[in-house]
Length: 173
Length: 425
Image (cartoon, rainbow over all chains, first blue to last red; front, side):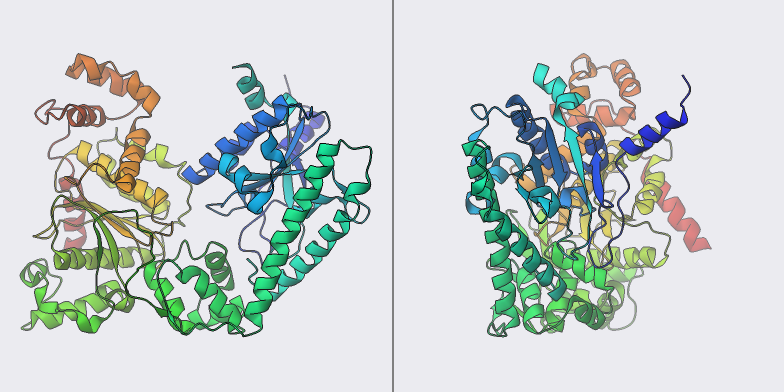
């Protein structure tokens, strides 16, 4: 099969872009935008040392819990998707659309002590993505697209749990 | 934590946006009640974090916090950031004082000086007039056998160094060897080395001669400094994905010497220097003053299996421990105790990198215990047979097995040949 220009264009758009330098920020970050990604791509691109592999395992574990409750989409942001060599944690937003709240793990309600229980269990923090505000739209996904050092825009990743092969494989095994 | 006025302004704006959103969160009756609660708590939690950071920054900027007492090593990174802000210095101001790029200071601070060598931290403390406690009382060192040296070059008894051996190796010369040793230290390892607080973690069954260790380390750092100045060394990143290239090199006849080039491309200096009397060192991992990881091997055992295991063990320290807050240099002797968490982690790193656990379990040679089975497994896994033979010998505690497969006498000659060639030139 030959690659048509449309197919090539689509393929290019699916890739996680390279990190870019943000003047005044200590680490390179994703260029502004929300980029679709799979967990396999994220593992390949970001889980490149022990700390990052540990956090990635926690992210998969949490995403499995969310997927089992019916969650379709997770956004990944924070220093994990920057060039920071050893991120303290990761930040994620989960889309409540389709979630059966009787099946949602109570840890996703727990924001005490700076989200300490979420971090202890999954290595990262989880915020709902659909909270809207008149001024800025989707509050948390917008919040995490602002570089905290400079105030400039940066990118985040969007993972579709319902079609992600890593999640599907874990759900069935 | 807020590090700059610019970040302070960003935080104020973000806090205001989130607080505005908080005013609307309870008004959306179409949402599930639990979701509304989650959204409210998420917002309150995030606002609370930012407001606390803003308050901390305002307090520091107000000048009402003083930093006149001494601080222990464990507290120092955060204190250095706070002291800079309290003194009204920007990250760029501090970078200029230290003759560094502003981004380097930004990175140091964003990681609480994680990647800074101990001597660099002392340098920053001096620049900010922050005094360091010499007791390391609150430094959390899970490691046993931590060894501390002097904080002041004036306290050093230079005559206790292995002067004759140092002279024999050509490091020092002259009538007054103790004075020569002092000069050697300052020139070899840099002025920071002799005056900085040293902190070492020694894995050893014996109490090693501290002076021999330091003399050896100074020599290692001297060689490393020359290597770093050559400019053809790569940039080190905490990304271990290239280690598979090293594993492939185990099958190469000149693998050990090629490993040195591979490490150099990836920003790590490999130094080979025989151990000094009074120590039984196999290897060490430390950070050069320029910030490059340095792996030093003594080649006390001239065997391939030993070379690769010790190399990967030290790389384990580089990737797992050297850049954490331990602030340690790692010195390893083979007969150290087996219940040390940090050492066990480095051991596991070495074993898993050379042969992943799942492949090791499939190795029939572990039970067949024949040379033929080892050769088959080595071919299947893609490593040199010495790696498997050495691992079986260690697991069985039998160092008489497979003497033909462990590459005896094939490592030192590779490095000595290169050294001799370079001396001849």
